[in-house]
Image 1 (cartoon, helix red, strand yellow):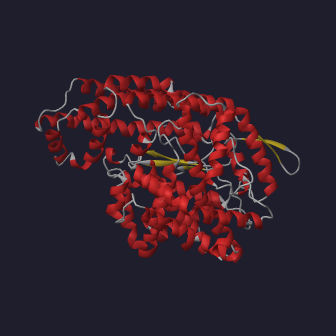
Image 2 (cartoon, one colour):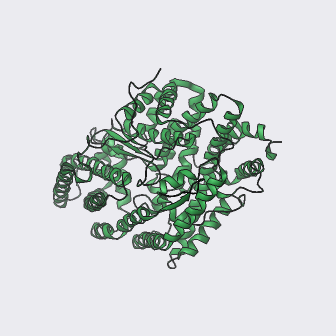
Image 3 (cartoon, one colour):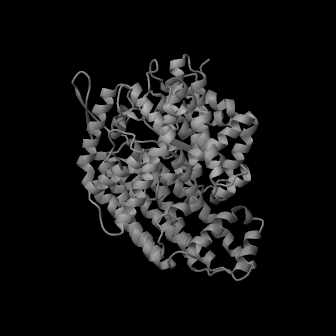
Length: 607
């Protein structure tokens, strides 16, 4: 029986948020009101000094409430304009609005910098009493975190200056990358000889095609297109890194990972333990890649073959079929999760149409004022697309649970955000395997799961190696496009342990993640989230639907504790030690897809 009484549309609906798109008068009024509110908060904060007694902390109550409202409104504004720029890369009005939101964010950051500094100046005795107040205790984690960070930064005046300069500098370069991407076109020759000009999002889907000749043609055109844009991308990436490095230098920060680790609320010991276990276990995945190459009649896989299917499933998946399958499988774990997904499809919170002009990739954007979500992707009817859709819905469900909490407790880090999304993806991908009609179909789906693991353990690792080394070299001066390509290829060869026949030297240019200004090192949190969710998923498998409530509780804690505290409280494990990570990778290597596929394909390491 169909879940939907009428066909669901693969395009999202934005007018219920702000009617009129990039011409919305209501949205402009919203931005103007937000500007005034932030300016009013700034004026009030400037008149205050650090509280000298517990009684004086009550003066800050109204300020804190106002700042939480403004935080939510800024997220709403940022999400809406992000949807506009993603759905149509040629919408110049949307680009202008994005610049306006960036300017407002700078004012907001200046306001918050002054506020956090007042917290930093508060004496410990007063602080402890303040955080113990019944109405403040629920948000004390973030306040304490920001207080500590304020003590490690420059004076409020210099931090505000840096924030102001970043609008047309740092963030301006990030937005300039969007302009570059909008101009990139990928010519593709169809089998009938016709040349089609694809957007980068459409071209990326071609590289998942089961036909190797299609993948090869798409990858060749893709590399050339990004090669043509490489000088512009190199200039942009160098400027972004230069800004970060100079700001870190002024703050007295020597370690390039200091900020990304702090943003993700995790320690270097945890990061090192995770990568260490991955390095120790990579040979097993290399053996799989070697066996896959033999099955495809090749000596070694090329870059465009790594994600290729080992066979072709009968027909493509329609968008409605994907929706119904996701909702059904979510419901087996949690009716609450299924209900959320159903609402997302019915209310058209998802932009999935395959059309030119869209930005590449996928994302989930939270709208805490409207208490809604918007999901963006390009759906081409593949199993991989179904997984991506489930992944983004997992993000949306995470935010849905956080909507019940104070805004300051909704500030969860990227690494734990990826936990919720990957968990949702696992629910659907495992169900696809279990419901496979034939042994061949089952193997194809299992192989797709292995390829996800390879992406997190090898592709993401290559990005991490590249970015770490790039920043070290950037300290000494700018790198040209050729040097960046060499650095990228070197990182890929190391991460894949030389298992491939060729690599993707312009990956650094084509990947948006390197140009995101809000979160530095937009890579290792993906691997963390994948492995962390694997451990959680194992518990869910053992406990069944009774685990759903525990899962919700874990997600709701993600904005009010470190990842080490989160794991200790909800899983009883120490993330700084290799044990948890070894158990998590063993599920991928032995207890799950690799085991089954290698039984069929006779991978050499399994004999």
